Amino acid sequence: MARGSGSPSSESDAAAVSGRPSKLWLLIALLGIAGLAVTTYLTSNALSHTEVGCSLSGCNTVLGSKWSKIFGIPVSAFGMATYAIIMLGALHAYQSPIYDLRGRRVVALTAVIGVLASIYLTTIELLVIKAACQYCITSAVLVVVAAVAVVVAARKEGPLWAAIRRR
Image 1 (spheres, one colour):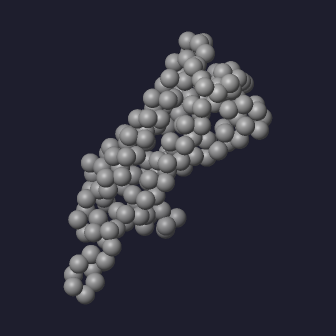
Image 2 (cartoon, helix red, strand yellow):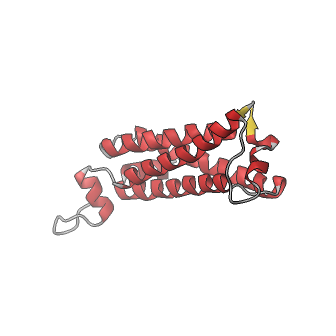
Image 3 (tube, one colour):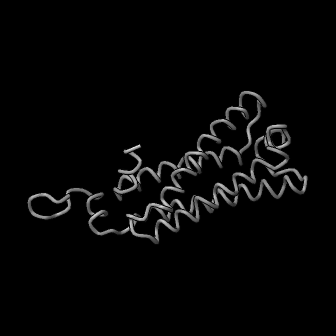
């Protein structure tokens, strides 16, 4: 890790040497809170059978489609769970030593699942339903940004990135 003078060779080496978690975990937690707000709004409207306020004409078309529920549960409720896990896992990661990978792994896996689900659902939204929902797109962007931030935090800290690369 250290080079000739004993100083850290990079920011990730500095994080690994200090054992301090990256502040990016706080950003990831904030992204989780934002995603939780969006998906909670959609879920509450779905459960109360009310239309959402939308600047695009397709929101209620998307949210009223057969694709908007899985086993009778609004897809947005699964989004709520995803963002809650991301938020809580990121807070755990921020408060834990960088070698404690539990919260970090949970956030990484949940973000990957969220990105894959968002790709699938956005494809359905645009190509099958042929409508766009600003809330759905916002949710997709939030989970992608969270996933990118997880990768950056993992690379910066070291141990999680090493565990990911071994797989």
